[in-house]
Image (cartoon, rainbow, N blue to C red; front, side, top):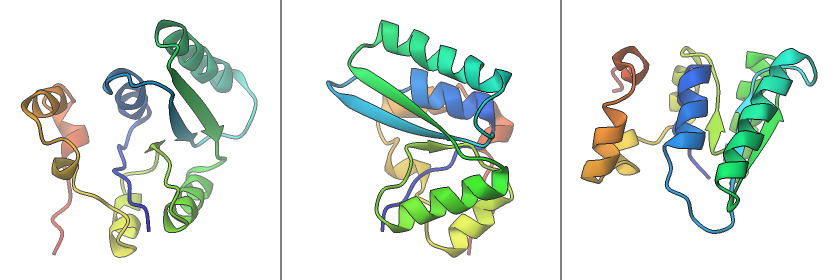
Length: 135
């Protein structure tokens, strides 16, 4: 079963997926975004993805508009349990408990272990980095 590290908050999730990762050849990032297909916000997100891809042609950002927040949670969990978790999913903070209960959360320390990674994480708004006490 594939696990993922949810980052709650659209701005943080988008920044983390697009601007925080080093570029590698032929990388594709799947980005689950909780809105219905269509409307002005999809044009904004598609514009961000296109602008990023223009600067980083070796990275493809694939926005997936997943519907409501509840739809997004179900789709992210289904994909993770099938071994194909999204690289980024914008979810509600309360969804973290459902993901923990389903053993789909990976500690950020396990993927951000280098000094550069830790320095990058410190640049996030502290409120976004708070985690619940897990027993």
